[in-house]
Length: 459
Image (cartoon, rainbow, N blue to C red; front, side, top):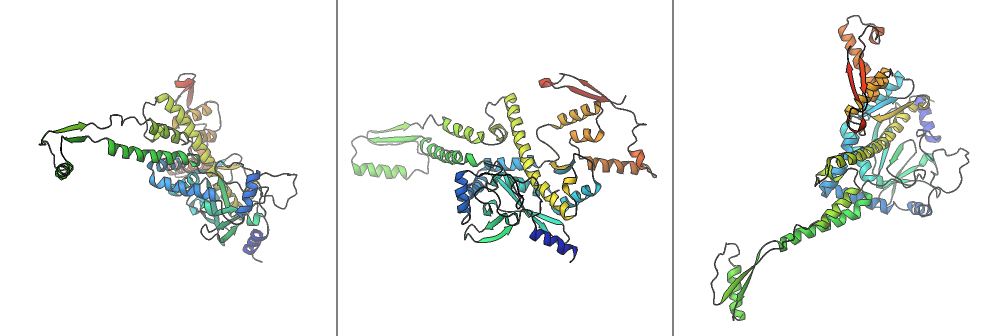
């Protein structure tokens, strides 16, 4: 039997622990777990899921897609989430000792899966926000390489779990169903499909899918759209000035002739009216059209469920700058949480690649992270890096604090040294003894909000 045949035999006949952080993948192992994890309502729902897809989840996803298509506010929310969450791209963050082989496999992994493409990352991030789940199918070729990560439509994916919320068989953990015919298209083992869930009701319940980000805002959005349409109709019917024509003593025939004559001139500007005892009285338009407190209330309610304050989406009103800064910090926390959910899925796929390459991922301490976290600004990260340097921390730790890709920085540093010296020696690159030491000084409480100021000099 060839090596490839042995690998495929393992994948077919043996549970592959490609997701060590995923609960419910210990099928066949004796544990002390007891009781039902799923709540009673979901236990009944799982019985229905054997025959159909979840109608509530599908209705929410379809409506969110429609909202994203017709409402620029919803589109802006989803696009801004995806843009800010993927800023800087992915990086391999080492916690323990680095491995050159693992780092090289990561670079090849990102190239094959186009994880260095911003559009790919934004598509996955937007899908996670709209659908509440990120189902990624890992495609493996004959050379035991993960060649692509295909995002599957969430509403067609059903976890195959029992009433307790655990997978019945990790070799058939998920199935895809046609939402029109309810025909089962295929099944996925746990190693082949990673589902990153956004705000599930119970994380330990593997049948509990995530929820779209604006799921709870759907009823408010419907009321907002309806009220905005009513406002347009009100303005169209009540804003224009009207004229009341009174013909004293005129019979119906004379009134009809006059009406036809006046309405026939509706396309022209009529300034004079003549008639026997005729009076024309102007009726002003509605003077209270600016009273739209109901619209303002619905807008505030809608954006209360958005990740960012409404001031970041154009509704500035009289929002104070300091209040906006506090609200932005909460938005950055939301983006960081979304980055963690995205990075978990990619880390799961990379661990599968290491297993296929014959490497135990648990032997190395690393994390897949996004290079730029939104919680801290660039100046704050640089300030923290300088403080680490002042404390005598390792150089790489200071670089990580500054948000710099350590591997890329080391490679560029070595490249720069080689370009200047025709006979470079590796030990000269890291030799810091002959270089002038940088002096870092820290002044406490010399910045707004009690932060300390940091300065650096060469002598």
